[in-house]
Image 1 (cartoon, rainbow, N blue to C red):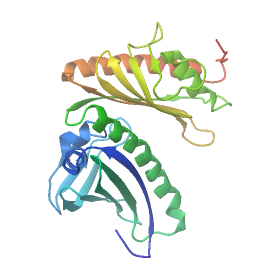
Image 2 (cartoon, rainbow, N blue to C red; image 1 turned 90 degrees about the vertical axis):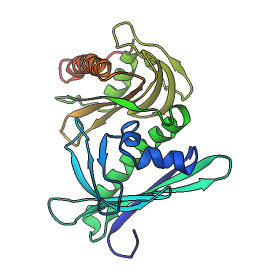
Image 3 (cartoon, one colour; image 1 turned 45 degrees about the vertical axis):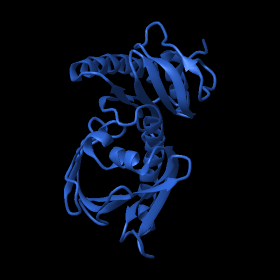
Image 4 (cartoon, rainbow, N blue to C red; image 1 turned 45 degrees about the horizontal axis):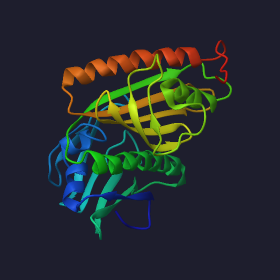
Length: 275
């Protein structure tokens, strides 16, 4: 992806593992499903890749544009109108000491400044996803994962849009103050079973590594959808060593609990109090 025209951006992270281990995670269907989204992938330039983003969005039908194991993987995602397509490249560079730098470049070949927000939004999504990739390679490399994905809305959104995330995390059993990486946590009495270690903590976003009810990674976010629009609660969970029916039951448990939290956190009835 090169040239002076268009709108592009990039982000990178250092992850544990060899280039071959990283490649398996980023450029195979089972590998992607273990930390990102399930994908049906034809591993060749010109091949198709269908990314299954439900419940967060519709399936994306993309075309593989680079396939150079274990260092470069790219694909184009068509849009309904100009500019088209949204191009993504993932580059892997080996480092000394058994780690790699993963760099993601995405953008449009023929877009003006009006598309900059979309590019930056895509990059922000990749920044959070790469943190999950790093922890997957650190703790679960090579293990298949099954999804426990839930999205629900806080609507109407309360006026203080920064408060619901902190209250939601407190109700989950993570306390009312700042949550530091490395801190251990246990579930609140009425929350779904979830205990383990905090991996990443930012305003409105947590990445957790669970030990109970089983090994897994859990990215929980709570973000405004825009001015005067609902607040989205997003749970992207990946569990390792689980059967499909077990993961499905766990997903139902989380859907029920998060929906109840969304209803209680909605304005104007709810008054959030420090407990």
